[in-house]
Length: 336
Image (cartoon, rainbow, N blue to C red; front, side, top):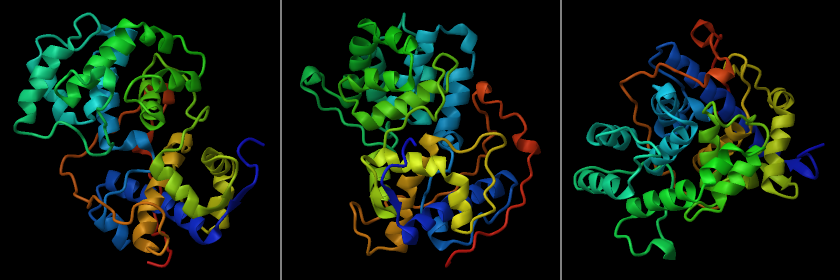
């Protein structure tokens, strides 16, 4: 059975994974309902944790609604993938909106000019941060050392290695999600983590169409969480993610969490479960600091946003009844 070979859970810590999944999802539903207090858990109230579903986080929501699907009929499939990549370099809504306002034309393959975009970004950088701190964006590669800034290196890499090389066509013609990942992984600056994240982002579009349960790649944070939650995780860390996917509902019941309310008709997928291991690693740093694997301190405190999100998902997901869905959310009791 895929992913279950030699996987041995650590019940003491894996139960926290499912505690996090249920309570963080309950927080999401309370926020959708307009409740003021989302959780009584002091750790979840103090620190920033992403949602259970990657696609429900604020930046992903903006990407899906405003970058991919807004006026999509005006763009070619190649344009849409390029726009995703440019947005994801910075992964910051304010930077994208700045570019949209300053450039004379929308970003497209035919007018993509890294130098002009870089000049605008350099002006922006004098006063404001241009990158989201969610991902560590490296910009060191000998092929691009002649360029003065990290953002110009990234934009030039996309132009040369993805657009001009024809790789973007290969991505559109890829037969599997893993094939898209491998194509992106071969680009400068794109290690396995970013290649997988960008694959998922492209898969939100109507032009890359694979199940999010076809393939998964564990990031560094997820690997730390997996090592904390399993006595043996199989031949590779991804085996543990497959194990959780295959036994998700049984494990929820096993640990006593029977009030998990997913998005209507859309159970968490491999990317969501992978992310939750990263978040569980963060949670356990505060809850069980004696588990010293990698980072010790949680870096970001929770800062509430005043502007609500009107959630929008890829139409192919058929999540159309979300605001009619009223789950009965009860506190997740676990040693608070």
